[in-house]
Image (cartoon, rainbow, N blue to C red; front, side, top):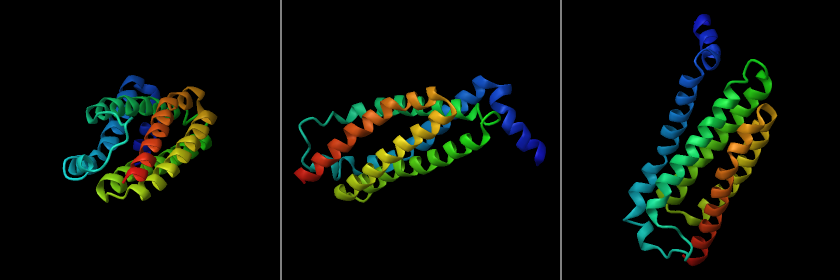
Length: 170
């Protein structure tokens, strides 16, 4: 068991490209799991509520989230690569990342799954704060990782505004 843990810790350095692909695919798969709630509600609920004028068409969300999750995966990989040189900071960054990602998935569950627009606004507000916290934690390990999360923060800022407008309209 100890050799397996040691091998796992060396994995990013021994095979960096494989580790990068693994990080991106993991974030993509876990991130996409939130779409289960979205898909179930699109035609039965989401299409029936009043939409803000600036709401993008539904087809745009897939490519945007795929791109954002890829950037998040690269950021996570950059932090992962620093686990030996900054073990404490990397561990904190991973912990903050996991909590933030739970809220990322939680927003889809609340907004689309439970169809609770107001509670979705509360969750996305907390998500926004957790993204900023994740950026801070990533920056302590690798500044590039924090910068890769800027587009994600901007998109979630836009999504929070949309969530607010949905709440006002409905």
